[in-house]
Length: 249
Length: 200
Image 1 (spheres, rainbow over the protein chains, first blue to last red):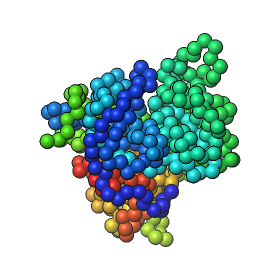
Image 2 (tube, one colour):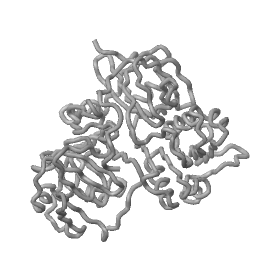
Image 3 (cartoon, chains in turn purple, brown):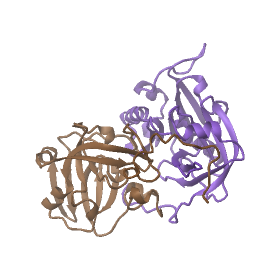
């Protein structure tokens, strides 16, 4: 990976004031915020942006959030409320359509999928780790790509599944496989346990087919899945990870 | 007049001592993990650390590195993803010790690591008691997910410069961008100047 040319912008990313176009509750704890950004250079699936909140006395808090929308779509972020958080409660409870919000982006050039890879795509999400992977699924649909995509998505309960209606409707080479780790509805036929080596062996593309994996979720989840994929024969360079700690808010 | 976020007050519980917490950061008691791929696991009997100067290579085995004088370092660390951790305690060998033994002299170094990661640093930022090859954290061996068996520790720069799973330093005449620097992060990464991304 060393020696690759510097990619992307060289001019600084400047803060700008976007307007909230819409706020959509995905689950009781998760909200998607659609943004009208005046000066947006365009983004790639998997990138993130910085949000900066400023109180009346000048106090500030900054966080970064994955972009939930595909390239070419209006910029959107999907935020999970953390009970002891500082920024996520504001974004999920206070912010509403018409409000301004300061942001800059897009940021990040490694955990991205541009759609040109020929090999099948494995997306493995834990909880709100699904957000950047959803941008990849949408990009796959919008770009008319025929790369086979499989999304393995681990949630605590069915009510915690983000983008459920949308993911239930994907087809044409995109599959979504759920596992619910804490509680299942009556008659649940999907997986019912944490993602482990056996589950990965059943769901993941064979390593030899040029498969590429993106894994996003809490640290312990990502550690287990990334190790499991390497054990299945995935070259480490084809397993890209993004993690969030328990403290991000 | 700068922009005000309607209805935002902030919790401020984590605002911390402004003399110790750089702008845009918040204090955490946890130790979050950020890395781009699977955690490498190189067995200690295969592990080496090298200082590479063109064709010349000075190499230490794990046991040889551990036999060098080590220091206990207490430092505040600052991740570009905005968490800061105060008073973290490390054990490691000073980079001064390694570069002096290798008689190294170059304006820049490129740390190289298992997994293909690299991080570029000016030599003056890794000498003079400012950087270590750390193998202990909080009195224990450094966990693999935090960069064990050994990572670079350069606490005065954003923590991605403290490259995990470090295996050596390559001496450079130019400030060649490393892994994250290639993907849009700042070439130097001073948290006090909020040098998060290229151009900041």
